[in-house]
Image 1 (spheres, rainbow, N blue to C red):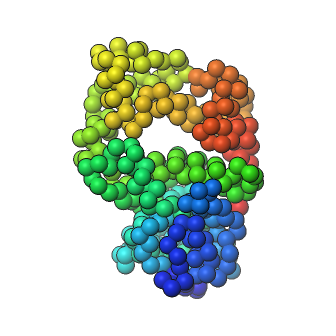
Image 2 (cartoon, rainbow, N blue to C red):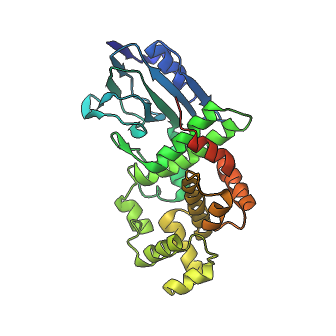
Image 3 (cartoon, rainbow, N blue to C red):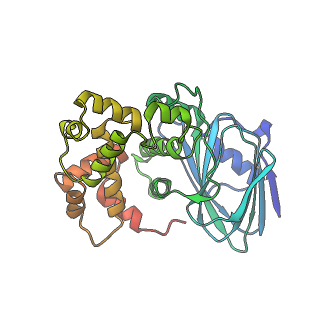
Length: 321
């Protein structure tokens, strides 16, 4: 059994330095690692082999949130937070757990075969900044990420696969791409895995959970017409409000204006369909409301710093580790 601890004296408190800190604790370097262009976010792939049991401990890190996803290998994971056993179960590939900033972690990993993990290290100030910019944090004053306890989130899985691809085939744009992917990841974590997810503060402000029937109807309509040319006036007529009021309602309820929400939904749907090799990129562009394959490529390049062809190659080339 290998038991390692992170010591305060050997560790700095930045997300960019986290892989070096862990390397010092486990006694080996990450298989791959990458740091974002802003030097605020980093990610690493860790391969564990040679021992049947690994135990990792660390002090609380006020400034870093750690998102951890298993990539390969059948193993059992028991996790303790602040000295309390939180969960213990087999950890399937791409199921996620999270060590929130300020939590003292301890993990015990048992496996007969090698296994690997992706770690994404996020500065907590980034999480707070995104929450503040969305407007949902004003009343709460702070945000804490919550551990999904070894569960699967397909949206996070998709982001993780893109991060792995950037680490596997790095180029001049990879560090910038990590910054963009981290933004998408943080938004998802705040929405679904944080103290603000479905909180009273959030639902009172945004009526989200989509409790406001008008917002719920608008979202359902856009979901059903994701490939159509939908204007703000169309939405206003649908729920009997002014265009300005619809824009405000939508922004407060989702954190985004309608046109940006629809564009992000189109890109998300396109990314899902790119995993189907029987569909051409032209067909996917048409199904998702883009004027042409070139239009889809332009938007994906702007939002994700990749093209449909590159994204499809990474999604279908599934041998990650």
